[in-house]
Length: 357
Image (cartoon, rainbow, N blue to C red):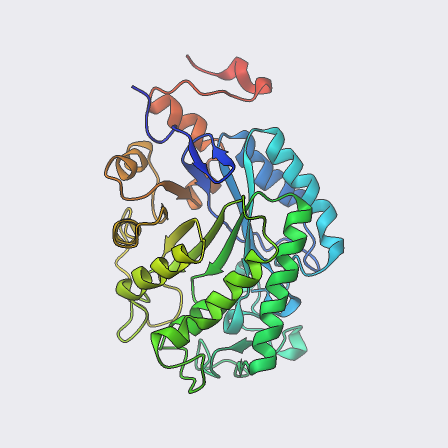
């Protein structure tokens, strides 16, 4: 009997050949937002390695939306050419290219991890960050984020819309809106970072307003027959923060609005979060949202083994399984998993002579 992990899944007009997705992972390897050969090899090798869907790292919708100066971007037309080349290779490997559209908000303007992951002040090439409210991520930061006013909010909405149009031109077949990990949309969702008193703050309905406006803007440019995902942090892991019940409620609304899948992560909003890390520690959130909101979900987080991923699908906890660090360790993860689960899948013809029967 074939495994569930290597069974196909059709969402709108796209059919994924299996349930293995490469999660968006920042590479901090761009100059002025441009993709280069590192991204071609990084993303392309995971496509030739057998994953069904390759979601490109958090891609900034504007220069100020970047986490670091080295982030990928899609804020100008000149970015499209290289992205189109990368996506064409992914498609040639019978995989689906996806993009995660993102704005870092108050967590922007930091150095790359190997440069200390420190907040950059203006003299170091940093820039003014923005957020729902002027509350910093760390108390010792050199400047406070600016609370977005109505004009600032509309600029971000317009930036997501324009970025989506470019994503279509670049050949992406799945779009994911990043509403997790403490970045800008999440900053509006959580009462820990949103203390506004206007129509974007206070009640649940007000705190989700910005996210719904972003979704609508993306949908205005994204083809209706292609999948649209939203990544959320199901909980802040902090008292008084965004919680699983609100995640279910938001997911119900996103389903009504035409979102196809919720990519379920957690945390990242506040530095005092308390997470008990263990294998599959976020899977229960994907299961809860899938069952209570009746929407497909993706599970992510310390999922490292084939049988572990298969069990998630067997228990109907999620519809897709996303791999991040384990994929960094092994670009050919799906090929190895197929052998372990006794599935005979197609290898790249250039590698077939190495396939162990």
